[in-house]
Image 1: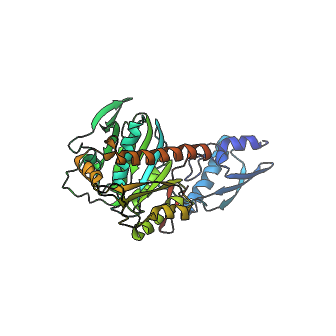
Image 2: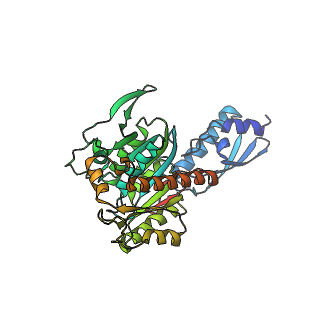
Image 3: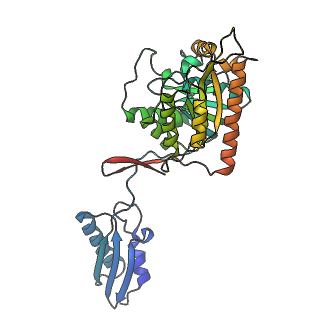
Length: 378
């Protein structure tokens, strides 16, 4: 019988490459086939280095050619093992959320600089401007949004969407809101390891019916840790806003926050820096400004890092009181506070528009493990 190379290739399509899920022809494992009369010589490369995988591959090739092509064929297999160059990634894969146009992460390197207060007021200001807004409280260990939006007693309801049960975000002041605070008691500490916190975040992101949103704001916890990586791994973040106060100790941490987003392996555009508690003006001296924490520290940092300076928010008692009362200060009309947050919000919107025109969509990052230590890559 005269052997034909096409028949051999067709037979080999019935064999799956160990650990790859594709047949040998599709995967490119077959490097060469030579036929001399009733002799077949096959050069093949696989990525699985185990002896069991090599033996199994050789046996399956022998069987399939004898069965499908020629039972008396003399077969020589030259099998080479080539280690995979790509490290294994975990199973969570970032993906866009249908209906959400822009995802803006609000972060701070240091706690206590007013990041959550800025996020809440940014959200309500966007809603006042006519945008459809969602806010995910990603500060798992210190959720504050239910209090700031006066919905601490609310619970997200379940809704049926395309045959699947989804969480319906709580809505307040025109902002759709989800927080781990809706699922815990106010006095209950959330004592979770990283994987549990990441799982909870993924449920609030992907098991919720957010609907159509122009902006989803992410209130990230302070620092540069596991939650930040989990968020950027779960979804493609449009851009990041860094909040800082003017003093050196806060600016040093804000610089680290900017550096985290700008790493080549993460590469989330930094939309700019916000200076919170920029100055204090007493009610009895409305023309005076007292720079309690230093003057224009965040503005100078933005200039040094070559990122936009988005604006400054004064240190005003009513901002704190409004947050505690569950009505963000930007809801007040015809006040300097409203004007400050409107200016900040317009600058952020402008940066998002410019970012979307000049840059391709951000990709969600992948977490890889190499030689026992974690790394981050696109």
